[in-house]
Length: 333
Ligand SMILES: CC(C)(COP(=O)(O)OP(=O)(O)OC[C@H]1O[C@@H](n2cnc3c(N)ncnc32)[C@H](O)[C@@H]1OP(=O)(O)O)[C@@H](O)C(=O)NCCC(=O)NCCS
Figure 1: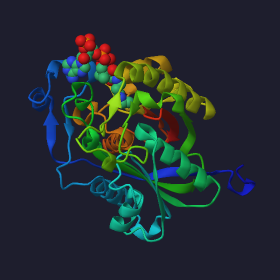
Figure 2 (figure 1 turned 180 degrees about the vertical axis):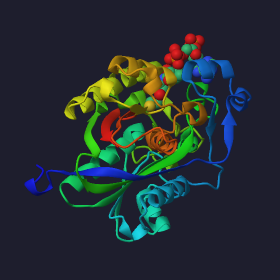
Figure 3 (figure 1 turned 60 degrees about the horizontal axis):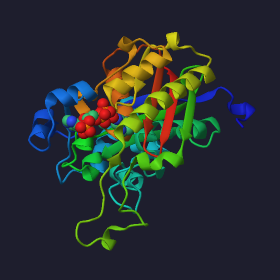
């Protein structure tokens, strides 16, 4: 329940930043690793290349670089942040949370810090939680990061998955704001009954790495591609319509949609179901592939820095991923 005192308070994104590894892995590189072709990958997914961390690069390094850029854009210093939320499924360690590592590296000494495990929908879960904390008056300046090193759990001998994923990070600074600009609505949903459509079977406490001796554990992302595809289209479009409805908006009000970059055909089909022309859908999947929790904030950072978004424009974001989890949000810029 929002108190009367804070009825007009909402979270507003005042800073954005992103970071990707320098190393580019092209479809032609993958042709040398598995039985695939550039033509197949481009026509089925829209991906041309993806960024892959070197061994010495960590997910937290990317998150820190993105977070620093977001702070710069917001004109804030590290001590101003009072909460850090980090969406990821590829933490640096099982303990501590990578949010605590990023907090240390960025010097966010006044912040609480925690990881959010909601796969590709992790950033939008963070944005929704940030907005809720801001609306109840508990925090004023929240950093939300989505960051992944998916190459650490990608099987580069499995053509069904290895062509899809990439590494990267995106960050947003969300500040308390009075007035009508900012986050208008958010929607979150999960369906744990479908968790085995997209998961990493081993490596958690139920089957820890030390319980395997002959390299027989399955520590890689395993996915039922076509089923995930079907759910992604339906849930991303339904969630988008819900977020629009909650904000009292229609699809024609949307200036730009920033969807999770999983597959160009998923984005096209979802946009068609929502009623948004494809020219209004931002896509950068060709450059980065699917970077899971990082994909929405990287895309958001790019679209805002490109100058395409003006004050008062309406943004729609939607994401879908393992869990299964999905989420959406509308923002008045
Ligand atoms: C994975 C995905 C690209 C596959 O595309 P698709 O059109 O559904 O293709 P299918 O799964 O029907 O497979 C078609 C054929 O291509 C083959 N294939 C799969 N990957 C291939 C590759 N990289 N190169 C060449 N052929 C490939 C399959 O083995 C299959 O061959 P078969 O018919 O002989 O068995 C698509 O299902 C997808 O994007 N799913 C969602 C993935 C995703 O976004 N996951 C993260 C959730 S956020």
